[in-house]
Length: 183
Image (cartoon, rainbow, N blue to C red):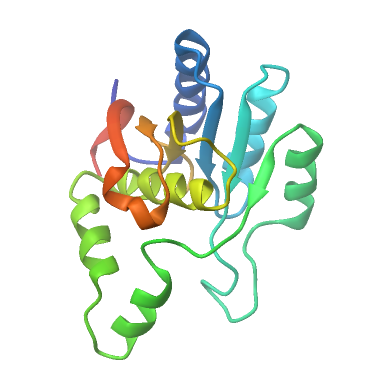
């Protein structure tokens, strides 16, 4: 399915499609990107009682302001009470590469991130959060569904064969479930 435009107005439908496809295909792991916690909480509420392992991946601490985590601690608690897991770690396509770029250098991470953005911001993020979750041992190295958005909310969902960041090119985006045409 394609949304005409990117944006948070697609969040509920994107999460609903991810849930339906996970159940239909027997996929038991969904990974969702969430900067502030709204999308993660919506996913946790929708997936409650389904038996699906929900991993909500946040931005790393300090991404916007030194020492500050953008993800709401209250929302994290609610997600965990609903059975989801919240993971905060180093962003695979940002971390050290961004530090090098900010000093005028060039990074391989940025080249990969920019290449993935050709397919949409959500595409870059679904790949990245899959690697992060696999690195943390929170998902198996098998088919999962990853959900992300272009800015806030969710507008992209895909079936992905997971792998760790050190095997980044073994990660396979097998099928889009939904994405925006205009991003």
